[in-house]
Amino acid sequence: MNWVFRGRAHKFGDGVPLDNGFIPFRLAIGRVTDPQKLIPHLFEDVRSGFADAATAGDVIIGGTDFASGKPHAQGFIALQAMGIGMICESMPYNSLRAGVSSGLAFLTGCMGVSDMFEDGDGIEVDFSMGRVENLSSGESRSFPPLDSSLREIIDAGGSKGVLRRWWSEKQPVTMSGDMP
Image (tube, rainbow, N blue to C red; front, side, top):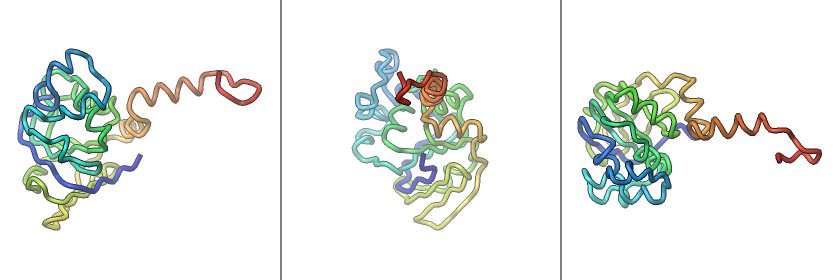
């Protein structure tokens, strides 16, 4: 995984919920997990046209209590599939778990990060080191990165990636060296 993202900042406020914020509740409750079905609906309830405007390398900037509510992972699945990272001032613990499980590159506990950016500013983030730079203003700050054990899960592609790796290591190898 490439831990350095460079693109545009998409600034959101405080308290943006996962359901009817990141993704419509009907998709979460419908258990839709196909990223291609989720992406067109990303942030449609709070910022129409987001999915068309955002590109890989862009970073979501969130305020406090970001990704609140039930920890449905559909919004994180869509962000990860688009190659978009996320930084926020705070988020609920269960949402943190869902972000890690989805393989999303993100930072939380970044107090003051919202003040660093205007919507559309250029941004570069090294998620492994916690370094955040506003390429438009030149301002740079360092925040605590996620713990290395959580970054390992994200680097594997989330919980599915960890389980795939574990499963492949546990399977017997055939005489040809192929996995059964």
